[in-house]
Length: 209
Image 1 (cartoon, rainbow, N blue to C red):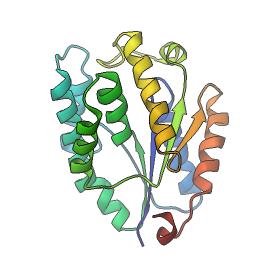
Image 2: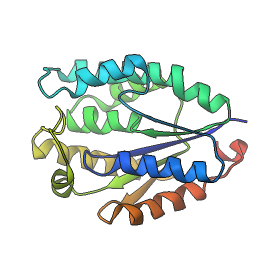
Image 3: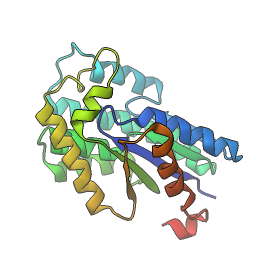
Image 4: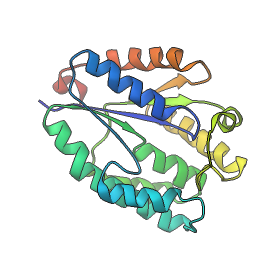
């Protein structure tokens, strides 16, 4: 039986890492076999690419940025995500293809059709069964960021506003897959909404797609 693929999306500072971790723990407490992973990263190659992509001092052009994210995703799908799903496991992934559309498509202004085709090539058409989009105004998200900001976190407010708007456009386009969750509340309250969405997923893969 094919496993279940769940992604957590949102702008920087929206609480993705916290919610992904809480969801994985919640599912494991219920006896589910869970793989918790992230993008960029999740593989040895991916972690090297993560350093390049998020290093605050690195100079990365928009086209190179897109291709690096797509390379990370291709390796991640082949090495981690698809094998886990084939084993019937639940994969909880922090960021996936929607991030590239939001950041490199809407944020950077790259051609959206090209970004979609690049994602399609990298994933061989593998889509999440459910995406929880943590919706948070960029000005609040910036206040929540801790530590030294990475290369993308240091982008101007207008960039993050375009990314946030891009996510909302994606949610409207993929309303059956993307569940918008108000991320302005405390983490426990946000998680209740995430868990409610996950609990509503059909367990039989024949009824998911």
